[in-house]
Every structure is written in structure tokens, then in C-alpha cells.
Image (cartoon, rainbow, N blue to C red; front, side, top):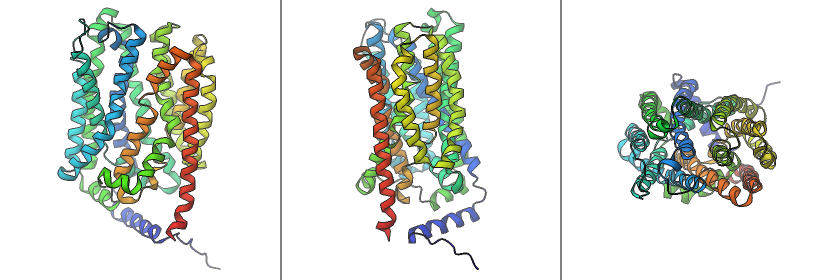
Length: 450
């Protein structure tokens, strides 16, 4: 008895299957593993820039730039400026998509990474604000905004190309590879700050030592630029991007045609994005203010946590390939909810309880953030996927992470750590609702296409 091949749901599926087969046959050299290297290097450099600013917001900026404020208000102001980059990201994506349409992908990528590195290293040249004037603060805010513009423009489409080239039964594994950049970036940034803070006197660290990580950021961006250009400017990758219709589309056209996917994508991983800064940047500020333990000890534990997050991110790929990416995100959201309830008891406890909070938080971050990308962007029509994936990420960061350290520190100072639990739980609820809506849309899509 002959076997019967499964019948595709619709003609679009048949066409996509044919394109995938032709793509694999004509571009065997375009290997997912090679794409993954470019993705990890590129993302690690971007996260390093952002974590450098985030750590400095607690350890340095209140003293160097806001000496006229008390410690709490100084950190809150630093966290306010911290959010500027996430506000700017969607605008950067829109601007650089237009640049790509007119001048090409390599020009866009070179300009955006040069802007990112330059705006980051310029922070190192800012003078201390001894007089309490507003000029230095304005320039710091401007440079932070330019960081966001540049990061929005650094989207190269490699994560989408990686997902489309990944074997069907290993999409969770390849989806997590790009997310490895987050713990790797924190690992490098935290290690540099720890080294400088322990090897220099407090006066030297505040005078010039803190500037060194911002210089390093520029060098890392140069390395990342060449690593990514080596891929995106080759004929093989250009043809692959064109075959998968991974080309920039106007933001207005995208919002008009499939804006609902942007909305769902921004909330589908909200719990993960909110947790992101609540275990990396916020604990530094809370412990620095309460002086419940030495800040260098906190950095050591966070560096260990970053190693744990790397392993957890890798594990997320294995788990997602077994139970599905959406189920993985939903399960992790529930666990993040449990973690949120335990937050006041852990952060208000002694050193062991706080260290437990950090290690558990990084583990959950790796498991959840490892699958935070691509779960919803696959819903975009092919011609919208390139821009859609970029803007979905931008809005997810804006909604979930941009104001997380600011809100968490602000409400914890006024209402206690219970308010942080409520804040994180609200992200969990949003994630579960968005995933439920996304599942309903996927169920209806084949029916509508028939």
C-alpha cells in the first residue's frame, strides 16, 4: 500500500515549500551555522553597549553627572535617560530601512554600527558635572537617544534568514542562538566593570576608570561590523535574502497591512523582556541603595548568573523543539509569575537570599528570553517579515524593558518590593493573553486561506 503525502493547507504553503526546496538546492553554501555566528557576534556587541550604560547608570552616573541629587534620585534620572534608547529604536528602524532601500544593506549596516559605536564612545569623553549644569545631562540624553537610533538601524535580517534556513524540527534551537548575545554581552560588560572597580581606587574609578568600557564598546562594534558584513554583502546571502523576500518595507505600509502582529508581538514576550532588566540592572540599584552587601559581590554573582543564563538559553532551544516555542514561552511566563511572588522575600533577605534571586532570575531569563524572538514574527506575510521582525523587537523592548528599572526602583521606594511583584505579574498576564490571541489567529488562518 503506497503512502499518502500530507496535503498542504493552501497554495501559499505549496509555494513556500517549493521556494524552500529550491533555496536549499541552489544555495547549499548558505549554512545555518555560519549565519548563527554572525547573529551571535552582532547581538553580543549591541548588548554590551547597552549593559555598559545600564551598569554605569548605577555605579557611576549619579555621582559623576548628577551630584546635585541624592543617590536614589540620581539613579532614577539615569534610568530615565536609559529609556531614551528604547524610545528611539522604532524611529531608527524606520529611518535606516529607508536608507537600505536607497543605498543598500551594507551602507545601512555600516552607518548604523558606526553611529552606535561613536555615540557610545562619546559618553566616555563627557566631563564630570561638577557645577550641576544641564548641558552635560542634555548631551548624555542625546547620545543615549542616538544609541537607540543606531540600534534600530543595526537590523540585518540574519535572525530571520537563520529561522527560515533552520530545519523544521530544530527551529527552537536556531531561534535561541541569536538570543545568546544577551548573556554574553552582560558577561563581558560586568567582568570589565568588576575588574576596574576592584583594581582601581574609588577616586580613579570615578575619575577615568569607568570610561574604559565605553572605549571597548567601539572596538567591539568594529569587530562585529566586519563579522556581519562578511555575510550580508556576499552574493550568496544577497540572493538568499531576495529569494525569501527579506527586503525592507515602509513602516506605514506594514502597520496598515499587519499592524496587529506588531501589537501581539510586543506583548507576547512581555514577561521575559520585563524580567530582563529586573535581574540585570534593577538589583544593582536596589542593593547599592540599601547597602545590604558589597556591590562587587553582586557583580560576581551576576557574572555567574550570566554563565547560567547561557546554559539556560541553550536549554531553551532543546525544550522548544520538544514542546513548541509558544508553549515554552507560556510555561516560562508562569514560572516568572512564581518568581515574581518570591521577589520581595528574596531581595529583602540577606546576602544568600539576594544571590538566590539573581541566579534564579538569570536562569529564568535564559529559558524565556531564549525563545522570545520569532514566536510571532512568523505570522507576518513574507514580504513584511523583514521589517516586521525588526519593529516587533523594537516595540517588545519599548513596552517590556525600556522603563522596567525605572518603574521597579520608583515603585519599590514608595510602596516596597511587593509593587515590583505586581509589576512583573502584570507582564506575565499580558504574555499569556497575547500568546492565547496568537494561537487563535494561527488556528483561523488556514480557514481564512481556504
